Length: 250
Image (cartoon, rainbow, N blue to C red; front, side, top):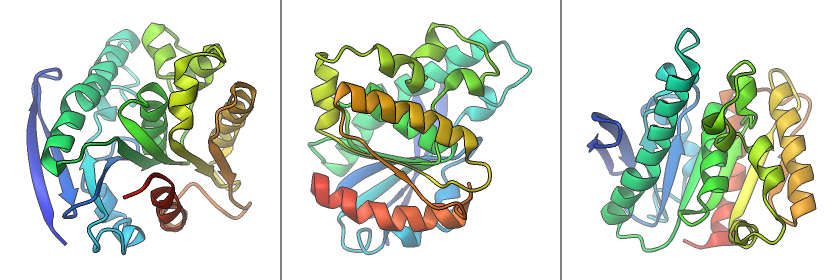
Protein backbone atom coordinates (compact mmCIF):
# COMPACT_ATOMS: atom_id res chain seq x y z
CA UNK A 1 0.00 0.00 0.00
CA UNK A 2 1.27 3.45 -0.92
CA UNK A 3 1.81 5.69 2.12
CA UNK A 4 2.75 9.36 1.84
CA UNK A 5 3.52 11.98 4.50
CA UNK A 6 2.22 15.42 3.58
CA UNK A 7 3.18 18.77 5.07
CA UNK A 8 0.86 21.59 4.05
CA UNK A 9 1.27 25.20 5.09
CA UNK A 10 -2.06 26.72 6.05
CA UNK A 11 -2.40 30.43 5.46
CA UNK A 12 -5.63 30.37 7.46
CA UNK A 13 -3.99 28.79 10.51
CA UNK A 14 -0.60 30.43 9.88
CA UNK A 15 1.18 27.15 10.53
CA UNK A 16 2.42 23.95 8.97
CA UNK A 17 -0.06 21.08 9.03
CA UNK A 18 0.60 17.38 8.72
CA UNK A 19 -1.35 14.51 7.23
CA UNK A 20 -0.75 10.92 6.18
CA UNK A 21 -2.17 9.62 2.91
CA UNK A 22 -2.90 5.91 2.44
CA UNK A 23 -3.83 4.45 -0.92
CA UNK A 24 -3.33 4.86 -4.63
CA UNK A 25 -6.63 5.86 -6.19
CA UNK A 26 -10.37 6.03 -5.94
CA UNK A 27 -12.58 8.14 -3.73
CA UNK A 28 -10.80 10.45 -1.27
CA UNK A 29 -11.78 9.91 2.37
CA UNK A 30 -11.05 12.62 4.93
CA UNK A 31 -10.30 10.92 8.24
CA UNK A 32 -10.76 13.05 11.37
CA UNK A 33 -8.96 11.85 14.52
CA UNK A 34 -10.42 11.28 17.94
CA UNK A 35 -10.01 13.92 20.65
CA UNK A 36 -6.51 15.45 20.72
CA UNK A 37 -5.52 12.92 18.07
CA UNK A 38 -3.04 13.04 15.23
CA UNK A 39 -2.81 11.64 11.72
CA UNK A 40 -0.89 8.55 12.85
CA UNK A 41 -3.72 7.40 15.13
CA UNK A 42 -5.82 5.79 12.40
CA UNK A 43 -3.05 3.33 11.64
CA UNK A 44 -1.81 3.19 15.21
CA UNK A 45 -5.18 2.06 16.59
CA UNK A 46 -5.54 -0.64 13.95
CA UNK A 47 -8.16 0.93 11.68
CA UNK A 48 -6.45 0.29 8.34
CA UNK A 49 -7.47 -3.40 8.09
CA UNK A 50 -11.10 -2.28 8.32
CA UNK A 51 -10.62 -0.48 4.99
CA UNK A 52 -9.47 -3.56 3.08
CA UNK A 53 -9.94 -4.57 0.28
CA UNK A 54 -11.08 -1.11 -0.85
CA UNK A 55 -7.61 0.30 -0.14
CA UNK A 56 -5.72 -2.47 -1.92
CA UNK A 57 -8.04 -2.32 -4.93
CA UNK A 58 -7.50 1.42 -5.35
CA UNK A 59 -11.12 2.29 -4.62
CA UNK A 60 -10.39 4.71 -1.77
CA UNK A 61 -7.53 6.89 -0.59
CA UNK A 62 -7.44 7.92 3.08
CA UNK A 63 -6.35 11.44 4.00
CA UNK A 64 -5.70 11.35 7.75
CA UNK A 65 -5.19 14.76 9.36
CA UNK A 66 -4.02 16.06 12.73
CA UNK A 67 -6.51 17.70 15.08
CA UNK A 68 -5.92 20.92 16.98
CA UNK A 69 -8.29 19.87 19.79
CA UNK A 70 -5.65 20.46 22.45
CA UNK A 71 -5.86 24.17 21.62
CA UNK A 72 -9.64 24.29 21.22
CA UNK A 73 -12.07 21.77 22.74
CA UNK A 74 -9.56 20.38 25.26
CA UNK A 75 -8.00 23.71 26.27
CA UNK A 76 -10.21 23.90 29.35
CA UNK A 77 -8.36 26.83 30.94
CA UNK A 78 -8.31 28.92 27.78
CA UNK A 79 -10.63 31.74 26.81
CA UNK A 80 -13.70 30.01 25.30
CA UNK A 81 -14.20 32.58 22.56
CA UNK A 82 -10.56 32.37 21.46
CA UNK A 83 -10.75 28.59 21.49
CA UNK A 84 -13.79 28.60 19.24
CA UNK A 85 -12.33 31.17 16.88
CA UNK A 86 -9.33 28.91 16.40
CA UNK A 87 -11.54 25.86 15.91
CA UNK A 88 -13.49 27.68 13.20
CA UNK A 89 -10.20 28.57 11.49
CA UNK A 90 -9.41 24.85 11.46
CA UNK A 91 -12.78 24.18 9.83
CA UNK A 92 -12.00 26.88 7.25
CA UNK A 93 -8.57 25.35 6.68
CA UNK A 94 -10.10 21.93 6.04
CA UNK A 95 -12.84 23.17 3.72
CA UNK A 96 -11.05 26.01 1.91
CA UNK A 97 -7.48 24.73 1.78
CA UNK A 98 -7.19 21.03 2.51
CA UNK A 99 -10.19 19.74 0.54
CA UNK A 100 -8.99 21.58 -2.61
CA UNK A 101 -5.54 20.06 -2.03
CA UNK A 102 -7.10 16.59 -1.72
CA UNK A 103 -9.03 16.99 -4.95
CA UNK A 104 -5.96 18.21 -6.81
CA UNK A 105 -3.78 15.48 -5.33
CA UNK A 106 -6.25 12.70 -6.13
CA UNK A 107 -7.56 14.14 -9.41
CA UNK A 108 -11.02 13.49 -7.98
CA UNK A 109 -13.82 15.57 -9.49
CA UNK A 110 -16.64 14.71 -7.11
CA UNK A 111 -17.34 15.13 -3.42
CA UNK A 112 -15.40 13.45 -0.63
CA UNK A 113 -16.28 11.07 2.17
CA UNK A 114 -15.64 12.03 5.81
CA UNK A 115 -15.29 9.60 8.68
CA UNK A 116 -14.13 9.47 12.26
CA UNK A 117 -14.80 8.00 15.68
CA UNK A 118 -15.41 9.70 19.03
CA UNK A 119 -14.43 13.37 18.54
CA UNK A 120 -13.55 12.42 14.97
CA UNK A 121 -17.18 11.35 14.59
CA UNK A 122 -18.24 14.73 15.96
CA UNK A 123 -15.98 16.59 13.54
CA UNK A 124 -16.91 14.49 10.50
CA UNK A 125 -20.64 14.74 11.20
CA UNK A 126 -20.45 18.48 11.65
CA UNK A 127 -18.44 18.90 8.44
CA UNK A 128 -20.88 16.95 6.28
CA UNK A 129 -23.96 18.61 7.77
CA UNK A 130 -22.42 22.05 7.21
CA UNK A 131 -20.79 21.39 3.82
CA UNK A 132 -22.77 18.89 1.74
CA UNK A 133 -21.37 20.68 -1.31
CA UNK A 134 -17.96 19.21 -0.41
CA UNK A 135 -18.95 15.80 1.02
CA UNK A 136 -21.39 13.18 -0.23
CA UNK A 137 -20.83 10.50 2.41
CA UNK A 138 -20.24 10.14 6.12
CA UNK A 139 -19.41 7.46 8.68
CA UNK A 140 -19.61 9.11 12.11
CA UNK A 141 -18.96 6.59 14.87
CA UNK A 142 -19.68 7.52 18.50
CA UNK A 143 -19.78 11.26 17.90
CA UNK A 144 -21.37 13.73 20.33
CA UNK A 145 -23.22 16.54 18.58
CA UNK A 146 -23.90 19.11 21.29
CA UNK A 147 -20.97 21.54 21.20
CA UNK A 148 -22.20 23.37 24.30
CA UNK A 149 -21.82 20.09 26.22
CA UNK A 150 -18.26 19.87 25.00
CA UNK A 151 -17.75 23.49 26.14
CA UNK A 152 -19.31 22.87 29.59
CA UNK A 153 -22.31 25.04 28.83
CA UNK A 154 -20.59 27.93 27.05
CA UNK A 155 -22.48 29.10 23.97
CA UNK A 156 -21.79 31.74 21.32
CA UNK A 157 -22.34 32.04 17.59
CA UNK A 158 -19.31 29.89 16.72
CA UNK A 159 -20.30 27.16 19.17
CA UNK A 160 -23.77 27.27 17.61
CA UNK A 161 -22.56 26.73 14.02
CA UNK A 162 -20.53 23.73 15.22
CA UNK A 163 -23.37 22.19 17.23
CA UNK A 164 -25.69 20.10 15.04
CA UNK A 165 -28.30 19.62 17.79
CA UNK A 166 -28.67 23.42 17.86
CA UNK A 167 -28.46 24.43 14.20
CA UNK A 168 -30.22 21.50 12.54
CA UNK A 169 -33.61 22.12 14.25
CA UNK A 170 -33.57 25.65 12.78
CA UNK A 171 -33.06 24.45 9.20
CA UNK A 172 -36.26 25.23 7.26
CA UNK A 173 -37.92 22.19 5.70
CA UNK A 174 -37.77 23.83 2.27
CA UNK A 175 -34.12 24.86 2.54
CA UNK A 176 -31.94 23.61 -0.30
CA UNK A 177 -29.68 21.93 2.27
CA UNK A 178 -32.38 19.29 2.79
CA UNK A 179 -32.03 18.13 -0.81
CA UNK A 180 -28.25 18.50 -0.61
CA UNK A 181 -28.08 16.31 2.48
CA UNK A 182 -30.41 13.78 0.91
CA UNK A 183 -27.91 13.46 -1.93
CA UNK A 184 -25.45 12.17 0.68
CA UNK A 185 -25.16 8.76 2.33
CA UNK A 186 -24.82 9.59 6.03
CA UNK A 187 -24.26 7.03 8.78
CA UNK A 188 -24.38 7.95 12.47
CA UNK A 189 -23.51 4.99 14.66
CA UNK A 190 -23.01 4.38 18.38
CA UNK A 191 -23.05 1.49 20.77
CA UNK A 192 -25.34 1.33 23.79
CA UNK A 193 -22.62 0.25 26.21
CA UNK A 194 -20.15 2.12 28.40
CA UNK A 195 -19.29 5.79 27.75
CA UNK A 196 -21.87 6.23 24.98
CA UNK A 197 -24.54 8.15 26.94
CA UNK A 198 -23.97 11.58 25.41
CA UNK A 199 -23.58 10.09 21.96
CA UNK A 200 -26.93 8.33 22.29
CA UNK A 201 -28.60 11.48 23.65
CA UNK A 202 -27.44 13.73 20.84
CA UNK A 203 -27.98 11.16 18.11
CA UNK A 204 -31.54 10.77 19.41
CA UNK A 205 -32.07 14.51 18.98
CA UNK A 206 -30.64 14.39 15.47
CA UNK A 207 -32.85 11.44 14.53
CA UNK A 208 -35.96 13.37 15.57
CA UNK A 209 -34.79 16.40 13.57
CA UNK A 210 -33.93 14.32 10.51
CA UNK A 211 -37.32 12.59 10.62
CA UNK A 212 -39.11 15.93 10.97
CA UNK A 213 -37.18 17.53 8.09
CA UNK A 214 -37.32 14.50 5.81
CA UNK A 215 -33.54 13.98 5.85
CA UNK A 216 -32.58 10.40 5.09
CA UNK A 217 -29.71 9.74 7.51
CA UNK A 218 -28.98 6.25 8.83
CA UNK A 219 -28.95 6.24 12.64
CA UNK A 220 -27.65 2.84 13.72
CA UNK A 221 -27.44 1.80 17.38
CA UNK A 222 -25.40 -1.27 18.23
CA UNK A 223 -25.85 -3.50 21.27
CA UNK A 224 -25.58 -2.91 24.99
CA UNK A 225 -22.20 -4.64 24.98
CA UNK A 226 -20.80 -2.16 22.44
CA UNK A 227 -18.58 0.35 24.22
CA UNK A 228 -16.99 3.64 23.22
CA UNK A 229 -13.72 2.03 22.19
CA UNK A 230 -11.47 1.16 19.26
CA UNK A 231 -12.26 -2.57 18.91
CA UNK A 232 -15.88 -1.71 18.17
CA UNK A 233 -15.02 1.17 15.83
CA UNK A 234 -12.84 -1.21 13.82
CA UNK A 235 -15.84 -3.55 13.43
CA UNK A 236 -18.25 -0.71 12.63
CA UNK A 237 -16.00 0.77 9.95
CA UNK A 238 -15.47 -2.61 8.30
CA UNK A 239 -19.26 -3.06 8.22
CA UNK A 240 -20.30 0.41 7.03
CA UNK A 241 -17.56 1.34 4.58
CA UNK A 242 -18.52 -1.09 1.78
CA UNK A 243 -22.20 -0.19 2.19
CA UNK A 244 -21.54 3.52 1.93
CA UNK A 245 -19.22 3.06 -1.04
CA UNK A 246 -21.86 1.02 -2.82
CA UNK A 247 -24.34 3.85 -2.22
CA UNK A 248 -22.20 6.71 -3.51
CA UNK A 249 -20.00 4.93 -6.02
CA UNK A 250 -16.24 4.59 -6.27
